[in-house]
Length: 66
Image (cartoon, rainbow, N blue to C red; front, side):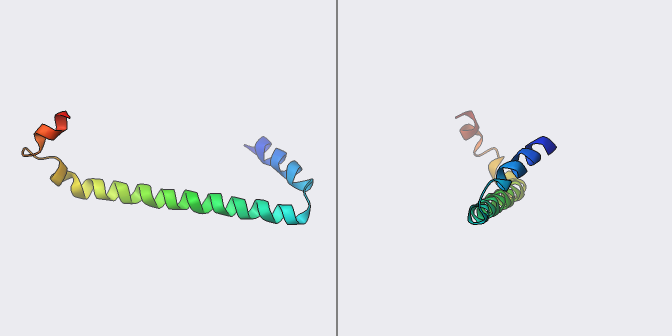
């Protein structure tokens, strides 16, 4: 991983300051998107356990075969 970071640092050093600001904005965007995905996955996991009794019942067992 250090090699990738070093390589990125070398590329950043070649950019003018206004382009570096764009890179920072993009990195912030990626980090925010990853944070949102983490929240979605956590919500999915929480709802799976709370909805399991609704999904797993004898009345709807026929739908399990679809």
